[in-house]
Amino acid sequence: MIQFFLSLRARRPSSPLICALALVCGCVALATAPAAQASLRVLACEPEWAALTQELGGDDVKIYVATNALQDPHQIQARPSLIANARNADLAVCTGAELEIGWMPVLLRQSGNARIQPGSPGNFDAANFVTKLEVPSRVDRADGDVHAAGNPHIQTDPRNIAAVAAALAQRLKEVDPDHAAQYQARLDDFNGRWTSAITRWEKQAAPLRGVPVVVQHKAFPYLLNWLGMSEVATLEPKPGVEPSSGYLSEVLAKLQREPARMVLRAAYNDGRSSEWLAQHAQIAAVVLPFTVGGDDQAKDLFALFDDTINRLLVAQGAAHKAAPK
Ligand SMILES: [Zn+2]
Image (cartoon, rainbow, N blue to C red; front, side):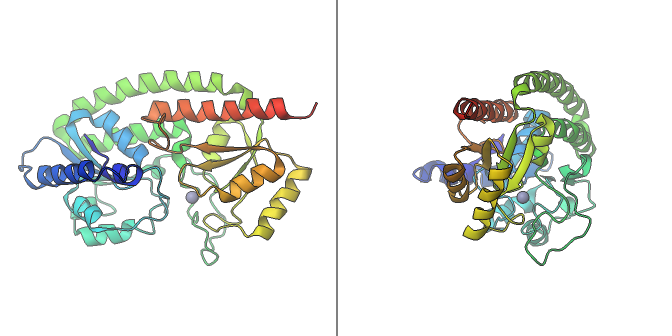
């Protein structure tokens, strides 16, 4: 079971009753859980890891998601409800690579929960199990770069999801050995479905190979690398730094020399700079879900990639038709 009350609060502010019920039910369930309660309590930092943990954990896990797809995972407040859930968690599943450096250390400290501290089996960082891109040779945080440990947005390549799934299943077995067989069975089942899906996505995405794009935030290097697309410019002068109008004009000028087909942003991004560029460069502005829940279609990990590829293909088709002959 995944508690999505944070998502509900953010996306449907007119449903306070649902939020309140979800919150109360969640707290009661945690507070009254007996010592021998079957469910492993998992704190997932981002929706993609909640979805993956649900695939692997099934009925053996109870998941609380710290963020939703419409929030910038770099910038989260460690508020009381989050701290309460961190206090009760048996396992924290996060991205790592410093994605959560602005809030997770505070959350871990305030939780007082030894089980999920760094170095404990209950502390799982997904980025430790993939090859990171954009790892800087020289770290300089002074100018606001939020990707100082390499690019943390690993979930946009499904091959990374597969690598994390194997490691996460292993960790679930370690922290909850009573259900080891179930975790392994679910991993095997997931791997079968995921491998077929990757083959299908790669076939569908073939027309995207070589397509040049602009990105707003450096959120998609893994996706572009997987699909063979190329990034010709970034709207943020450095990851996490908003562009000035002068900088946007420089990007626009660059596109005169090196055209792009579309400008990509994540569901949580403010769209103003992307829309400005799209209008002035006459290219498509594409909003990608980025994680589970980023739009109405991206309901689970499979639908996340179905929808991502579909949106890119639609934009590519439109750009292709609009391109001068
Ligand atoms: Zn980032």
